[in-house]
Image (cartoon, helix red, strand yellow):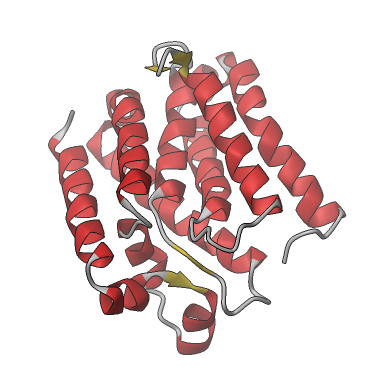
Length: 213
């Protein structure tokens, strides 16, 4: 694992720890539609990715990042990893902002958008080289996004996770991968298609049925 990945994981863990033990810090830097649109606190588009709801939420995101980061750094290098990670993070939160723009109370936290971009970029390059809990990487990715879509369409009052950010982040990771390695990505189009099914369904619910927003 490269130094830059270790640094991102370490910083995320440290800030998440402080956020879990400091309510004022947590509230100041979490993603919140009203704070971003009304008070122009755009730092929340990035800072929210370094906060987590609890240690299990943090562990799951960092574990997913650990499993998929290797392929991304081998194909795109450290700079490419940083571009995908932060690009997915920002686009994921911008997508959330668009979806929930009429709900100023909406809040979310977590590195899910950034990790989603890494997952999609990894599967685009090497869908069968990764195994997560005995599941092929592409199948894990499909279940990961399927769960995100389900939670978006069936929100729970207690759930403060940024499920919408998963989808924007996944889109960035996919587009970046295709742009840099189109032949490699297209050779794995069936796996990418399977992972995209939940996202396509969500698009239908958002833009056709107007179910969210």
